[in-house]
Image 1 (cartoon, rainbow, N blue to C red):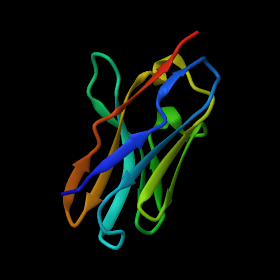
Image 2: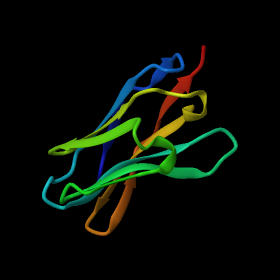
Image 3: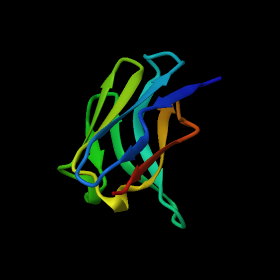
Length: 113
């Protein structure tokens, strides 16, 4: 059973930074992709950033130039800079492994003064 342990959420002022981390309990070799989604209040869950096993990255237009995704073995990171109030959301870790989709429980990011 895949387990994803997220950390790093919290309250930050506009313009500030946070780094999210997510560690996967499964085998490193079978990971196809890792990433982050988010769900803002009253909205659907959307892709934030994704990194494939080959290192290819994909970002939502709204975070390009501000967020950076990285992976180290079975851990994926999301460095979030220049945060805006509209980045406020529950952030979910995502792993694609052997064609199966896995989700973390979520970590709340609140951007407010």
